Length: 148
Image (cartoon, rainbow, N blue to C red; front, side):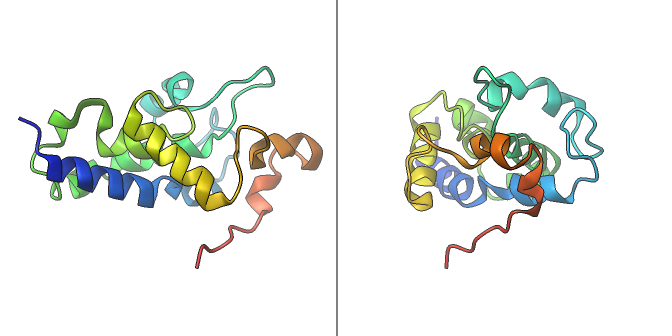
């Protein structure tokens, strides 16, 4: 039986940590996910599921680092949940990682909250699509703005 308290915790923590990959990605010596020293093989092979892939290639790759963060910290977060495995596709890792390519209603909820908090609809213009104008890896030097 699903514990709705676990669902609630998963959504709250997933929304809170959905962009943790932006910090993790900037800490990586290698800019490319293909040559990353931090990302595990399992994370890299999931890029099709996690990152949007418009005609010019994958975008929102920080979500890969978010996925990897949760994979590596899984034991720390397990202590919070009664049984995360019963949450299925809406487990904490997926809620936080799939916010740019959601496949469930709760993942879409986090995506829409992300859009609202950024003050714009990212389907029209997003930060990573501007990379073609400013340089592919310029995001590493772009200041992360505090929300407070």
